[in-house]
Image 1 (cartoon, rainbow, N blue to C red):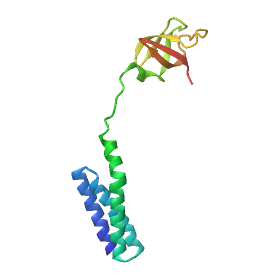
Image 2 (cartoon, rainbow, N blue to C red):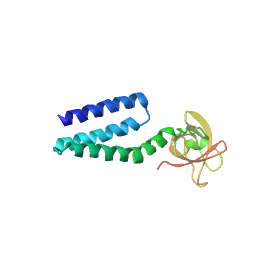
Image 3 (cartoon, helix red, strand yellow):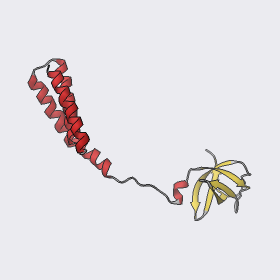
Image 4 (cartoon, rainbow, N blue to C red):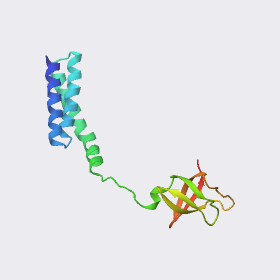
Length: 142
């Protein structure tokens, strides 16, 4: 009977968390779930309550701050040309030490080879190593 009560408490607390969204009720639901497990073992009721208290406090003190910090940190979308480094490109025009063209991120970019002695032929696949102003520096696909 105690197991069913703890399971109901777990579900109610998890439901309250959906309304509140601040992770406190979720941590308490975690404690209630641990108490459900302790109740399944068959110990006395005070063991269930102590398990609930210890696990809930532990989750609130240690896990909740990490989750809140993770949720509050803004997601950064890098839209700079440096975000294109590592992208696979198709060589459109022979690309050597000084000039060439590639298709990068759906548009045509000027490019040059990382090694002046290496020339990429049209149709080859390469990888962007770095971006210098408006020129992509490419090298062999890893």
